[in-house]
Length: 263
Image 1 (cartoon, rainbow, N blue to C red):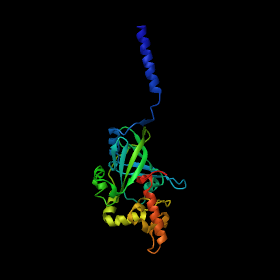
Image 2: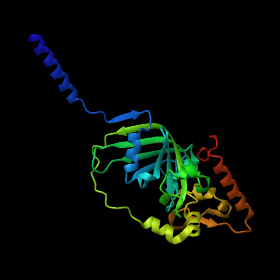
Image 3: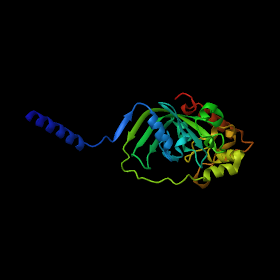
């Protein structure tokens, strides 16, 4: 009887000590599991972070939606469909660096709290470069059926972590706003090409961005109306400015984010 009592006391003491220890707040994972893929797909909003190579330029965090704009390709690769917006910081930063990118997904609805981060290096594919198989991984409303579709980012993930999210609020989803899709539909394909040429050619710090990769790159240079480096047309007779624009576009094509080699 004494042995049994001592064993029981030891077991209870062990359980008490375990309960007193704080729960693990962060965990490193070896791969993107099916459970993580499901968690990603269910998110109504997530966040993308990038940092430029130039320390005088600004770090950027962008909200994105929905979770279905992210497709898990394998245990260490995801792809993200990208729609046109008023800026193009993400692409500008990727082409300045070796493609460093972090995606953050956080549960702010009912259910267990969770924060999932995917760290890695991304490459940029313009719509014409996206294979039908890759495009089929996304809803057509985010790609081929949307005039605002401007790119797909393919992220090779080298670090996967979860953390608690204990302080995150619990919110109730109502609906997605339709304004971005309405805007693109109203402008049409040609109108969105012009819009991207104006607002997606340079970052807010003047670094070349997504639309400089396109065929019309030789026709634009950074201007600064309203505090943004929006593109302005290069005059037909300014051959030197056009040569500079062409060299800028060619240099971007050689960056790791476009499949080139790091310097």
